[in-house]
Length: 393
Length: 41
Image 1 (cartoon, chains in turn yellow, brown):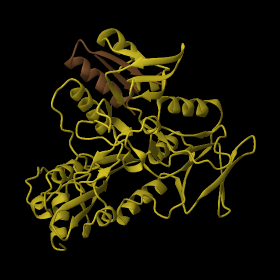
Image 2 (cartoon, rainbow over the protein chains, first blue to last red):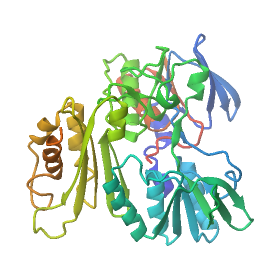
Image 3 (cartoon, each protein chain N blue to C red):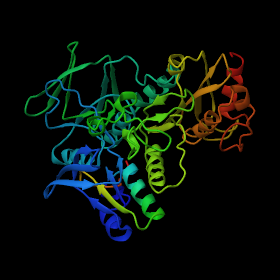
Image 4 (cartoon, each protein chain N blue to C red):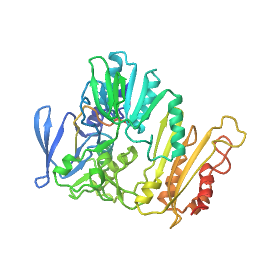
């Protein structure tokens, strides 16, 4: 079933598209002067010359180095092989409880998948906030949903070590608390796989991602970078940023190919649009948080509202929360966040479009948005929030 | 002309496919360190 996730098998690329796909080939060095990639494959070392090179090496889950983190049963989830390892582990023994280290969207999505198998789940993280980038009223909704689903939340839990007693794993906090688990999932974020590029002397960007221009070119014009390993310009701040997400990976791959083939390319900036599902809730964001706005030199004003997800008296309605960030100086819309059972995942794209267009909150509040009772109130939740935010700018 | 791509997931295989559509003559080689290419996570 995991193999269903493969969009196209290597053989399709090889046989139908005439693309040489060399699996089990690990690139280990780039000779920029001789234009050769070296590495190791099934037949030993290889050296492959290039005219154009694309570095699309992705990102890797961050794995802390404290004692015990290398024990069997301590897992990460990024690649298909990681997924296969987790499924095999769950099938190989009775797993009653799992500790998830980290509370980002990978951790939340795994919490849901494990609870669906009736496995006890505890989530731990050192910092006090569940989702530090999410507005506090919206965080309350997410944590209530997790608790209702039987997920135990332990903030302020800084894992010092994991002890394998041969049967189960003891996850020990620096402060002395401990949790027992059959499996530990480490989901504390990813880092760009930029060591190869850095060793070749290519310029790096934020968080050690590979710095690229609007044609995906690195500091060596014969080498391009795309996907999770590459940086981007942020449309709101105008600064370089590193936000590794799937659409961007696909888009930069296309852009790199077009540039190699001599087609005109201008890669757009990003606004950091993202959405994830946690049990029945959708959680979405685009643009800057208030803190990111302040750090970028804006003077942020925020508003948090909630409305019904459907028109007044329409059956089946639930609550949508909207948090908007605007700039007091320029009146610009800087960011949006939303939490709700329905109407969140795609509504966030309206705010994303406004950020790309660099709209003011006033302009955003004047947008003509669609309405029908099953899909929202006549005043869209985003417009309700924008009308409130205008008053504080 | 040879286009070499390091990494066979979303970005790498998008680039390989797009380059092939644009240029049937281009030599395209993808180096992938695992067994899997082009998965959607």
